[in-house]
Amino acid sequence: AARIRLHHLQSAKDQGAKFAMLTAYDTMMASIFDSAGIEVLLVGDSAANTVMGYSSTLPITLDDMVVFAKSVVSGAKRALVVCDLPFGSYEVSPEQAVASAVKLMKEGGVQAVKLEGGEYFVPHVRALVAAGVPVMAHIGFTPQSEHALGGYRVQGRGDAADAMVADAQALEAAGAFAVLMEMVPTETAARVDASLHVPTVGIGAGGATTGQVLVWQDMLGLGAGKGARFVKKYADLRSVVAGAAAAYHDEVLGGVFPGPEHEFGQ
Ligand code: KIV
Ligand code: NA
Figure 1 (tube, rainbow, N blue to C red):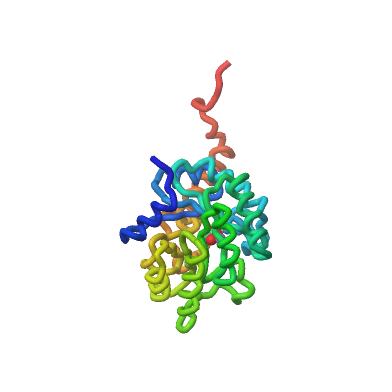
Figure 2: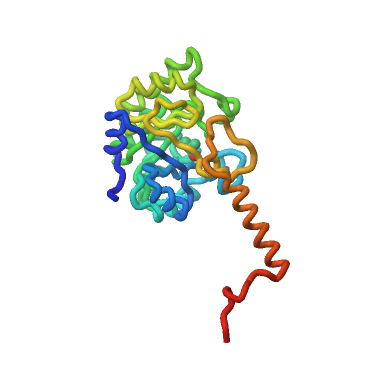
């Protein structure tokens, strides 16, 4: 199947259709999701949490992201691959943002980048778009600003909805091809979506957005614990993997594995 491109996502918005996005950090999961028809793969800086075990996304570096990006790109034949600009790799200046995005595209092979932030980042988005870098803007709860925002909190409630619409419109005018909203009341997200020509993507933002995104370990139930309200578990991989590991352990200690069918003769 032909590569998903920006115009396919725009067509979804124009026609009132939807698209699905999942995070991916390695080639095998990327190829499974790609084959399943997921339109957009996000090389999320959530790799800091899900792969590297950090308690926030702040420590992951641009070099780390390049490794994950290459791995995902190698497994994605059809999906559009979008990669996060990690904390510290774009805020300083539009020039820094372009240099970092060029590295992700040139070395990582991704087709677009995502950055967190509102109207303040209009110059950065403009510079990226001028350089030929498609940009998805991420507003609402932005995990890289966890400490400034006072933790994981819903954004855009009440009076804050107007500012969120203004941010989204400024980012669209700067050339962003999509606006992602995280942990935003459904009503605010619907207002933002209605105020934009470009598609929106939601995580914890209700059903009015053009696209939805989830972190794959959450969606497939690999992580321990209950997970956030906005996560739906489509599988329970943690118990599948734990059960298989325990069965292997028992069979090795009990001399059951390997069996004759796994052995080489003389
Ligand atoms: O890094 C990530 O996984 C993300 C999504 C949660 C939107 O940015
Ligand atoms: Na992210």
